[in-house]
Image (tube, rainbow, N blue to C red; front, side):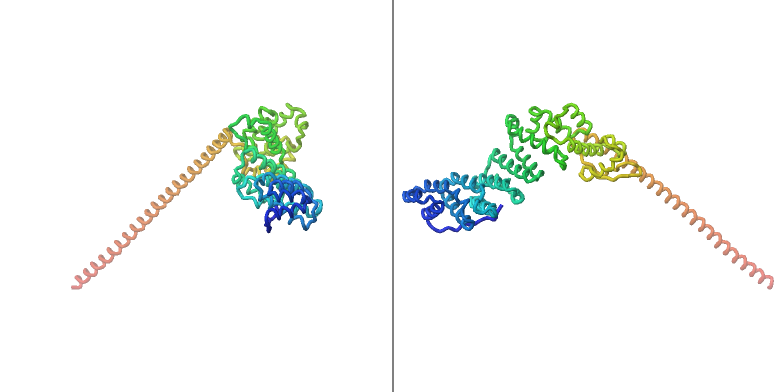
Length: 434
C-alpha cells in the first residue's frame, strides 16, 4: 500500500464542485444544481462522470482525484459515491501505463486514510485495495499491513460474514502470488468465522466449499505435516457427510501410514486422478509421515534399515536418502549408523497426540523409571561399598596405630629396667669396696 496522502484544498463546496465538474466536462449540468444548493445532485453527476479521470494527464491525475475525494467526503452519504471511485481506480489508468499502478494506489490509500479509523466504510475501501493489489500482482506490498487486519475488523465492528469475505479475499491474493502458507493461514481464519454451534451454517455450501479447498491445500502442500488445526474446525468435520472420501483421505494424512494410503487408492481406484490430485506428491508426503510415525513408536530409539524400508515400501539402498529427507522436513531428528545399519532417533514429532500416544508415553516413562531405579541402585551399592571400604581402612589404620603404640611402650619399659639394674650393680660394687 502507498504512503498516506494529505489533501490541501481552498474554497467553498460550490466553487470546488464547479471546478471539478468543469474538469470532467459536466460543468453546464452541474452549475444550475449548485445555484439551487442541490449539492448531492451535483456531486452525483460529478462522480458519474469521474471515470474520465483515468485518461487525465499524469500531472493532473493526483490533484484531480484529491479534489474529488475531498468533495465526496463532504457529502452526507459518502457511502453512496465511494464504490464508484474505487471501481474507477481498479480500471487501467490509460494516460500513464507506466505509473498507473502507483497513481491509483495513492488515490485508494488516500481514501482509506482520510476516513476515520472506526468508520465501517474503511472495510469496503480496504476490500477494494486488496482486489487492486491482487489484480496487479503486488501482494508483497500488502503483506506487511496484514498484521493490522484483526484490529481493524474490531474497530469497524465487522460481522462474521464481512470478516470471512475479507479473509477469503486476502487468501485469494496470496494464492495468486504463490504464497501458499499465507493463503492457507487466512483460509483457516475464514473458516473459523462460521458459528461452530450452528450446524446449518457449518454445513452450508459456502462452508463446505472453503473447507474442501483448505483440505486440498493442506494435503498437497510439501511443507505442511500437521492437520490438527484443520480437523478441529466444525465445517471440516461436516465433510464426513458431504464429501466422505475427502474426509477419509484427511484421516489417513492425519494419523495413518503409507499402507493405509495404498489401501485407499485400491478402494477408490482413479479417484485421486479424477480429483486432479498429484499422486506422486501425496505418496511422497505419506512416506515422510510414515517415517515420523515409525520413529515415534520405536521404544528403544533405534530403527533398523530393514524396518524403514518395509514401512516406506522402498529398496534398502534408498533408506539413507529418505532418512535425510525426513530430517530436512523437521519431522525427525537423529543420525544414521551405517556400520550398524540403524537410524538413531534423537527427537520426533507426534502427528497426533491421543490415547495411543499417551499409552506410548506412559510406556516410555515406565522404561525411564526402570532405568533410573537401576541407576539409583547402582549408585547406592557403590556408596555402600565405599563406606564399607572406608570403614575397613579405618579399622586397619586403628589396628596399626594400636600395634605401633604397644611396641613403643614395651621398648620404653625395657630401657627403664636396664637403667635400674645398672644402678643396683653400682651400689653393690660400692658396698664391696667398703
